[in-house]
Length: 161
Image 1: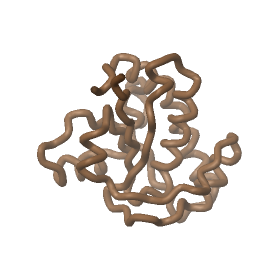
Image 2 (image 1 turned 45 degrees about the vertical axis):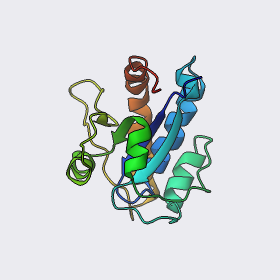
Image 3 (image 1 turned 120 degrees about the horizontal axis):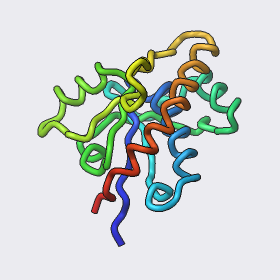
Image 4 (image 1 turned 120 degrees about the vertical axis):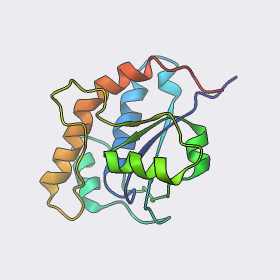
């Protein structure tokens, strides 16, 4: 049986945005029919060090919506992750640019997390790092707002063999 491939969420250090995006997207996929339900979501950072703890405010922001990411440990984005990825969702254009500059061949399946939102919506999710909890909650809410558009996009993708 073919594996459905993975979805990779990407930010800078893999300690704030991408771990929140990973958990929120995995939670949303769990409520979908197959094959979406079987997709695995992982997160990584374009400038991440392996093994850093997730930020406390990210943990608190997701705990408020019933998700626990306290055990998350950061990892750098690698060629192996990109090769396994059905799709990659970045938080900002600078993350996409870093991927395009760093990896050869350039992956074609790299999008912004909010890329499929209506035209008027801001497509980038700013970094809440070091800010107060309400910045992390705003970041979470921007991700939650994007999830329906991501689900519609993911329904159009074939499973990766």
